[in-house]
Image 1 (tube, rainbow, N blue to C red):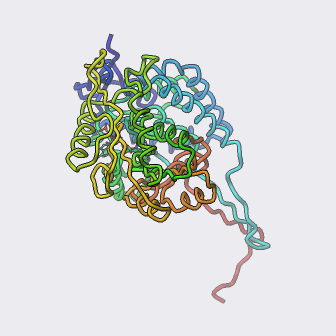
Image 2 (image 1 turned 90 degrees about the vertical axis):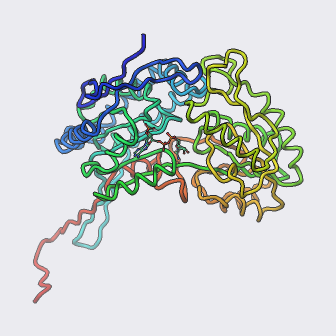
Image 3 (image 1 turned 180 degrees about the horizontal axis):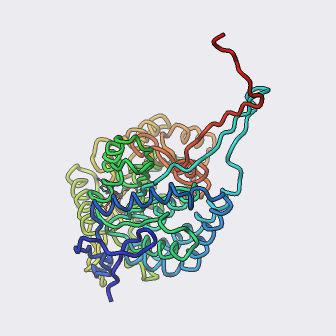
Length: 490
Ligand code: TAP
């Protein structure tokens, strides 16, 4: 039976007053797997007010860090116990492979555990400003946190926001992407089983233009944390100006992956495939622009294309599949359109470029791993985020040119360098204007490290102590240890 997804408001599962529902589709089969509520503007405003009241009541915001940590550990344990179900839901709703979804589910549990741990480490500071003056610097929750997440990592992006926002003592309102709410609903079912006071964590489903926009505009939301496209991020920033709410943005990318002549070729080819085809290229940090030094360009392309051709594309729940489906028909069409543009621009289509329709994949949104070579920096397929299994391989002459091409973009999310010369690799990676970088690797990261971009790839950082800071205010308290008049006006 098709699951009916309700909203979680003030500790209750409720229908929207709007009877219209959105069919939730499995992109590997186009089957309807659930029907989701669509919140109205009024419901969103009402939920924000509930979150504000809950925050002001102090039921959560006044709890000690240790008490909050205990609840976060409860949620982590529940996520851990439900990894299999979370994995299946993510596979069905997003189209990613089981291996990818499982890794996200494990990381989700770890993220809650990490922030619980962080709460047990002193975060405040004390200074002796003078003999008679003690200054304390304390961290406090901001208030109501509006959390807006995209469809590419529905579970992980939700948890990357929920865990630190709750750890800091805020009340929250989460809006998943309209088309991928399944794992977010499960997370809230688990939160409901924990000792988190009712009304602290709320979930609304619905469109970005209604629910997201209302969150971004609301005077009662104190921080909006958004992950998604650069275009919508810009819009959110503008909408947030009314009450000058804090804005945290994790946006798009077009990340360079630089391979020098002296790189270990097998390693470079391997990570460069992983860098773009993991998640079917629907990953913000994907290495979508491979830059290869001229001495090994032809050899690299030959090996790369051969391996890309061998990637097994199929439904995420098939053990054989190494790359899953594209999340929706709309996004699938947009990727195919970019492939058409690439051909029209004169890039050489070295591999793929087509919808896969054989072997039972006819109904799903599957695209071949696609490789364009002999591209130039002015092409749209090199400049714009395609967000699919499409990579360009560009040639460069020397270190200086590699850095110039790498930074010739409005984005600055990620980047990598492959070279056996460690000095050169470090020299070059330090010049790449991006927030998440690798030397002789791609995509590998950890919860402690801040995640976010330079330039139009965003503002602020997720994860680590930085991620907690996004949901905290910082206050100085100056204490006069010898109170007596200072006679300033005498
Ligand atoms: P978007 O279309 O930007 O949507 C992201 C979220 O914003 C969705 O929940 C969407 O709701 C909502 N939204 C849409 N219009 C809105 C508005 N006017 N006001 C407030 N919220 C609004 O992105 P996407 O297509 O889901 O995700 C892909 C993009 O996310 C890519 O650009 C990718 O690079 C980026 N991304 C970045 C990162 C990091 S960490 N930098 C991580 C993952 C993804 P609906 O979809 O329900 O309408």
